[in-house]
Image (cartoon, rainbow, N blue to C red):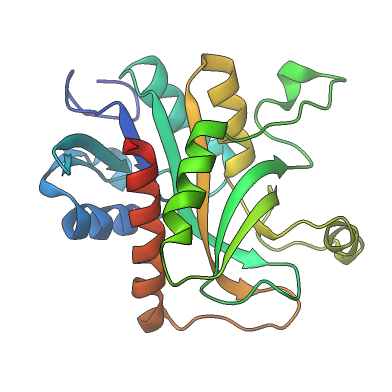
Length: 234
């Protein structure tokens, strides 16, 4: 057990999928894993371990934002031996050709700041995905009837962003979408020498103002979870 995770030794698999919402973790575990077992509920952050195609997998919530994800990812890696961590979550589309329900696989994750920024000091470290996971996820996504985009995303440290000038520059430089966790996950993976990836579903769009109704999200999120699971186990 750790401060934030009540799982016992052996309860956490080496492969961990991390949605932000703990109830999305519950839905994904019950939908895709065989015999999922609740292994953590400290502070309401739910984690489940079961099997997928015979391999042990944990699906554990990360909460919203990089500080929250940093807590859980640090403990999952350092104290429970997680080796492959994939963020599965929603994001806002930023490019005109990125549509609702499309899948974004994040090659890089730009940010203004992360919990790791104090460690890097003057260095602008470039956090990126594990190439093996990324290439496997791309191959999985290409076998599905989904819009697929691979490239850079932006991990914001605020939800209500008051910087339209910054958004304009990100669009200009090809950033595909915005979310709030991946950059710190990629930083931690580099630090600990483990594999990380973010597979994201576009649930809203910053330019058009479109957004998926909650009752239409499940199918798109299901594609994302399957892509992440199969990529992790390839």
